Amino acid sequence: MDKDYLKRQNRAPIAEALEDYTSERVVPFDVPGHKHGRGNPELTEFLGERTMMLDVNSMKPLDNLCHPVSVIKEAEELAAEAFGARAAFFMVGGTTSSVQAMVFTVAARGDKIIVPRNVHRSVINAMVLCGAVPVYVDPGAHEQLGIALGMTPAAVEEAIAENPDAKAVFLNNPTYYGICSDLAGIVKLAHAHGMQVVVDEAHGTHLSFSDRLPVSAMSAGADMAAVSMHKSGGSLTQSAFLLVGGKTSDASGNDEGGEAAVNRAPQIDPAYVRQIINLTQTTSGSYLFLSSLDLSRKRLALHGKELFDKVIDMAEYARDEINNIGGYYAIGSELINGADIYDFDKTKLVIHTLPVGLAGIEVYDLLRDEYDIQMEFGDFGNCLAYLSVGDRIRDLERLVGALSEIRRHFGKEPLVSLPNSYIAPVVVLSPQEAFYADTEHVGFDSSVGRISAESIMCYPPGIPVLAPGERITEEVLEYLRFAQEKGCQITGAEDSSLQTIRVVK
Image (cartoon, rainbow, N blue to C red; front, side):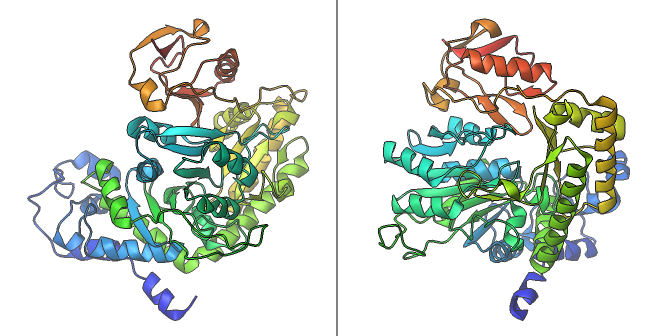
């Protein structure tokens, strides 16, 4: 990194402006109504005076999130530089709002988007709102682990051949489990067919800051990426970046035929993206969120490589220790096959639990209830510890010790016959058509053959088992029954007990 870059990235314009504001002893006759905390002493005691002082509204010296011209604009430019993007937007509605903005940008009603089935619920919800139509690609599932894999260029090429009118390709990269697709290869393929590529990089903030990790969306040439800064980047929960990539004029490589791969996809205009964001994002953006993004970007830009190299080393240490316990399998780079596991995010600590006779959700519950260890999530066969800039070796040692005790005290005969986590959807209507159609509630067991008007998923990770517009099959119902039996949280359905499902009349 050159000195000019370091000098620029050492700034935090929003945080600096807030510091100046608090030193001016301004008398507030604007919102928020707590007036620097004086109006709500109990909340002030709970959160602290400084937090309440910094919870302010947009004003001239602090800029405006909807139409930034000063400190927010400068902070966005610094974020774009740090992530290698053409433009960056501060998002205070979580990565969900970033994902929805990407879908709204690349597709309108009736437009097709090629997506893997293991997309987050926010993608389906975005299609409900804008009327886009999903073209699903089966990511496949790992036979042993039961986790969704990445999209391959071959699978995307097949989807493009069958749907040459699609507007964009949407990818998860990396997945919750750290599985990465051949992002650069898919970008090249989609661009050659005039399709834009947008990436849910919620779990890949760190990819831009270490050469020991898979390629980031911006480095791979993607048109847009949603980056969940609060997940591994250290900002406050609900804060994220939306990145816009640049368009190259010619090839970065050659295809098999030797011809240059030209980017034929329309270039995304950041000014239009701002308009899209302003359709749904609040006009009262929290300066707590904004300053946390600003300061976290600064830290990663200046120290990201050393920070994430440390996280990688901790994850590798924990993997070795867990695998030495016996029974458990903490997955790693050995899974890479250059195809549907094109690469692996080494910071992800995914623990396969079936060999010790316990479902992942059962280990998740035991760790929380018996050992006061909060994991990110547990599914049927796996449990995930989400490692980031705030983790410590001694905490990982505590996790390893707890897993060893769980195996001794609660272990059983290995489980091998759990349902596969991927169920091929039968799409009958667009998500928007089904969601807004005339509907009725029918009994869970009698819903087979009907068209769902709602999304139903196990959360986390929030991947739909059933989405609006899809035909309900016995396989879907069997999967949901098993999920309930194992204690998974079922979300999305109007009837949380799942005694009934909302279907199209």
